[in-house]
Image (cartoon, rainbow, N blue to C red; front, side):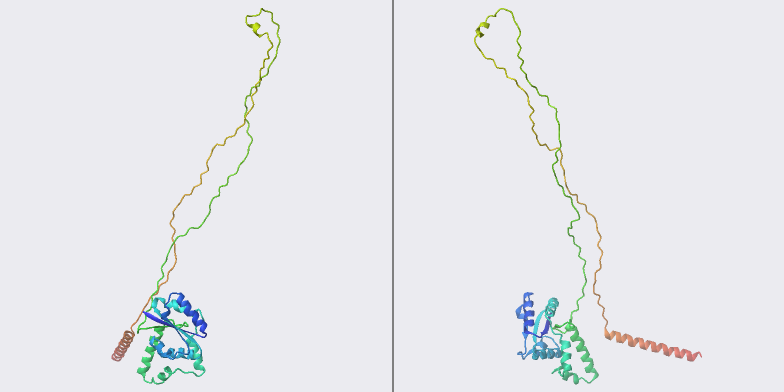
Length: 298
């Protein structure tokens, strides 16, 4: 169901800012209209949109005094967003402002004359019904922007909260593994061999053997001494492993909270009046029977 939101502003800049933000929020520019003192059909435009004549006269007076009007027609589910945007830029509370103007001597052109003509009780009852319907169609009349329905009916939303439970990961702890190098002295016992040459002269008295004369010429003999020395070599070996892993455990956690919901009750006024009248007649009959019983048994 389409609804119309109207708001009055004291400056043109505020009205333009509201129009720009409504456009940025996704509303079509063709559905947004701004008015100023140069618009002569303001009252007809507002009444055709569903505003009461008294409110239309008040907005027209605001334009005549230099104000600027922003009006937008949109779906019912987007009207709260429209009113929130309008309230951000100091929209005029038309109820308070019209009361101020009336204290200064201003009177609406249409609504005050019609009020003076309502004299009979049936006309007064019709006025009360019309007033109640206008307040219901206004919806958020306590706010600065006025909301009206384009049909002779109202929609009362029944709101119910739903509990939505989700999960997110949070860090509760951890482990840090750091490695460092330590040095320690080690000892090993190794057997090494050293060679030493001993020269000895010993007397011999024997005949020359065949072939020994071949070595009578000068000749040099060399014999080497060999020693063993320790060679140190180091080789790294893996002797241990540190394994770091994680284990996942699942547990059940119960979440408790409260949610709110609207409960609607209604009562037919005609049924309530008829029930009250029938109760009154029943009580009257009971009292009459009681008085007759007392008279018969003094």
